[in-house]
Length: 346
Image (cartoon, rainbow, N blue to C red):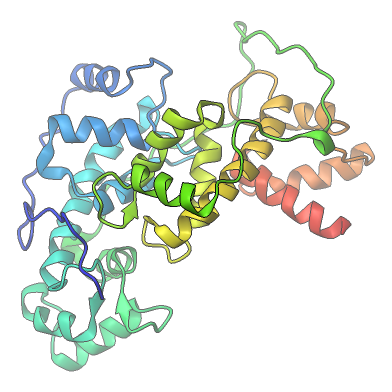
């Protein structure tokens, strides 16, 4: 297995330093620094840039990615002002887990074999060799013979008290009526059957190689979400819709490592077009631009989505999309539901 180049050794085998939690006023200043476009939402790329500039000792991408996912409590693909404090706490938590993980990962390939895990079982305090073997089997959920960072995190949080997360995420309530509502977008003639994102042509094999080298600028054979985001912004600004980019990134990361390989990069390009098409549809019916769709918005946009059903049937469709019963549908839920509707109609 080829070793990953350029891996940081700043925290290998050591607990990372604690980040002193800034005051509310200081967090507000930090958030503004992380949010250069002032839209009140932080993408993974913005968080990554801020961490590199302010706290380079925490610049371990797998830990950063886990902190970002954990802090994004409502699943929008962005960290809001209320979630920012939790991101900072998770950043320390997952960097501590990353330090323990890299202590085990002797060949630096971002995965742990049984022998690597047994070699550090005393330092990780997981018990006897038999208990360590059982622990490894519990972590290795797909029985692939090695453990990835996410599997390691899940097991440690459940079984090692010192790695348990001691705080809770912010709660999110449903939309409430406001006296100062955003202006509605004008209703346009829009038909999903004619929808096609423009601006990208399928690249040739040679062009894909050149694109990959540009995206993978550090040459480690893996692209993070931040690297993919950068190349999309530079080459295809029309596709710079973060929720669609996030879905494309997750769908193309077939092995769940948090990175897109050269082989997966072709899938990423296809998914980028696919989810941008869905984003256009979602954005069209989201008339108040708050990145979530109410039942009323869904009913008004049903014809444009070519969902021709009665009011009662539309309610059932909407409720099936609204997984948590919050009264609105997020982009991820919307994508999954449209895929099911398309499959059912086929």
